[in-house]
Amino acid sequence: MNKLNYLLLLFLSLFVLMSVVVKPKSFESYFKLDIDATIPEESLNGDFQKKQNTSFDIEAFTSALEIEERELTASIERITGWTIEVEEYEDKESLMDDFRILKSRGLKAYIQYKNNEDNKFVLYVGPTMDRDDSRDNLTKISDLTRFSPKIIPYD
Image (cartoon, rainbow, N blue to C red):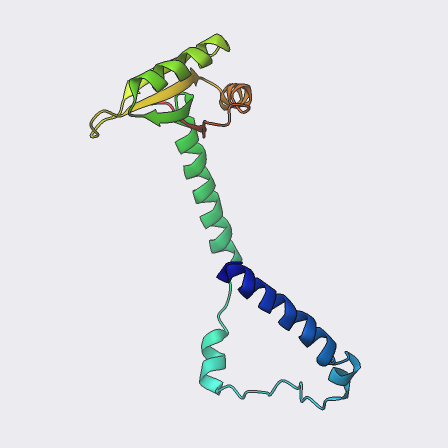
């Protein structure tokens, strides 16, 4: 037998010996221990309490929320369409294979060269005017596990 077998046999025998010799503690013994579980009170300085006592202006908060909502709505209204970014590729053969798969599923797939990066291509599906249409297209390719698609605004 090799050393590993001897080591495993030794480990197993130590385990059996320890389980026979050592008597486990009962759960009730932990209840018998006198443990001080009180949380000590901490005194706070008066100045610190005054600093923490700030007033809340509900009108300013409401107006800030309305402004933020208007800006968000305006930014969404400026978006002219939606597209699905399917995957980035360096290999043209796998790019074309996946392009053909998406086309065979009846999707409008297109390819763009990625700016500022050498030999990078991006495969897209779309564009659509409505985000819900892009979500429908996303469900059509959701069973293809090799993709990690995401919906993005169309440029």
